[in-house]
Image (cartoon, rainbow, N blue to C red):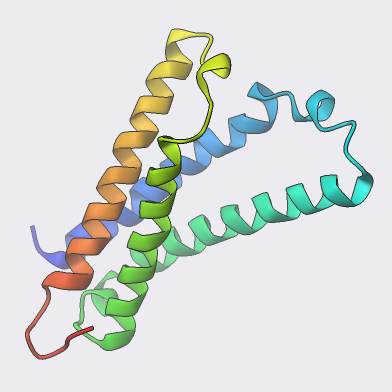
Length: 140
């Protein structure tokens, strides 16, 4: 498999995370649980979540639609891959500190949580590999 195919696969995997993200407000009952927040805090919470979703959509679209350019060994492409790897690496690290156990009440929620951990790992390592492995001509 070459880097172009890898970028496309990684781009597609990012869209699968959006499926899980779309279930979060319902599984965590945001309507009830966040009702006590001041309106501004609630709005900020939704805005932050929206920015994260938009980042994931952008990462996925750019990776799928511009895989050749991302795999072209340019400093911009390497920077993009490094940024995406750092983004998912941070999210992977958060898996270790977030207190999710009270919410993993069904087998499919536990399975989904572990699959997300695997996806975060694949995305971190995959984009990190692409950012670091290209050519000796370009260095970060």
